[in-house]
Image 1: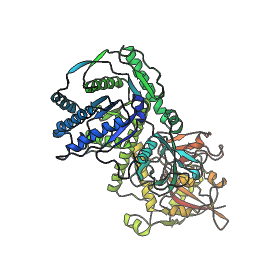
Image 2 (image 1 turned 90 degrees about the horizontal axis):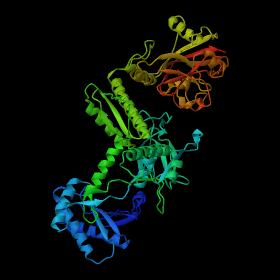
Image 3 (image 1 turned 45 degrees about the vertical axis):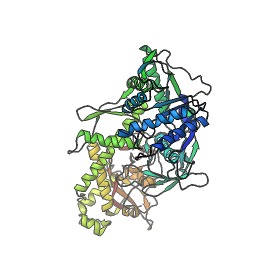
Image 4 (image 1 turned 90 degrees about the vertical axis):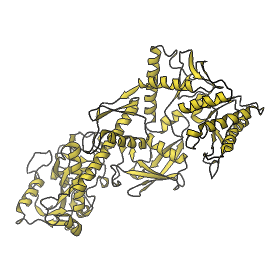
Length: 632
């Protein structure tokens, strides 16, 4: 359709395409037609459009046609104009039937709206056609198809991260492929996650919890068809696509699709088995024995000999409604149910308002169908078809809760002025922050005696969860307090967020070496200590802070000063949140975040020689409070 015409399909025109997924239900073509928008006097154009549809069917030698009521929706022929609309359809069909053409021999008029059905009954009687309720034979076997798979699988190039081409997962592929098929130039917003794990990029749009990207289909070249662009930094990555041949190909090429398929199939088999046990189904699951097997199709045959319906040369809205009702009831038995989930709300919000916000959020995610049920105690339960769909629904609920929490924290931060540390002497107010910027305040060993002694003790002892004293003995020659208001604001906000989520930010002191990078550079930057500038270590890519100063000093992580007799290290305040202890393994090298519900990991990174380190995976969990210079 996209290539049919630069101007699209005109009123009255008809374009035929293949039936695609409808082939499984026995269809060979889809005829696309555009009726006129209702205005007085355009009835003949609607009549001509119906005639064009039937002429195209005859040209293709189609034996039967299923014809919905054209124009009864957004084109304005519904409501008070519905009778006129149906009359034009029936007049066009009658004229075509008298034209002597051999095919199509059967024309089915259908609609899913009960009101349209009742109006149609009246129109049929005026045309002298039988339109009473009659007994009909059992319908053909119902068909249940596999979950939708896109026409293409998509991936992005991440060679700079050592990962080559990385496949987008199922929900992202659906977003990208739909935009591509619709001919969009740009897909404005996709989440930066892989199999549910958020991107580790440090560039995040304001107001968003995780990195987000857009895909520009106009930027293409040799070996790629689009460009992924980080919405915060503008960083670009090449994007390519490959054709998906069938459902088995989708399982191989699209991450998460096989899990979705297996879960949906299992739910369907459970449904069929349950209905067979109740005597409602004769044979249970049957293989597809058609000439062109469809591996994604499952059948069951209703036992009932007859059903009530409205008949007009194959038209039977009543049958469709009855079958859909029974099928919906049966599917209800396969719905999986979550535990009660607490809904976060503000003081001035009702539960209905909060759920409306969640429904809007979920519909825009366009992932799986689900149902939300209120429990009357401020909680809800989620229902979805199959375990996999329920898992996806619960993950989206968690993402929505985090988004609301973040918004609430941002409002809290706007209401409450950032509290600067009591130790600061230069930047003590918002006005100072704007006027002075970053300040390095050198402590005087005499005037700042107590603060100097505190820093010295923290350097010599284990910090964090370590308990040993006096381990590091080198001479401290200088201590600078780092007063960076912008960096502190981010750290303060992170502490506030952890307090809201966990009840306590669990601030600890720890040491961090910057190796060959001058620590002054880090302290002047608004991002501060950033895990993305660290190498992936024993516990993955994270910010590593040491409990024992000897680890940073003796393992080569401190900065060597230009005088060749001094080194520097950062003494940091760390918003550790909930900490979990882990042992090093091959699996820990691949970590990109702490396991839920933890915020950081504590582990041995030096085979027992220098205590433990704490690994942090989120931005702004570390603030370099002091820059300490010591003699080698």
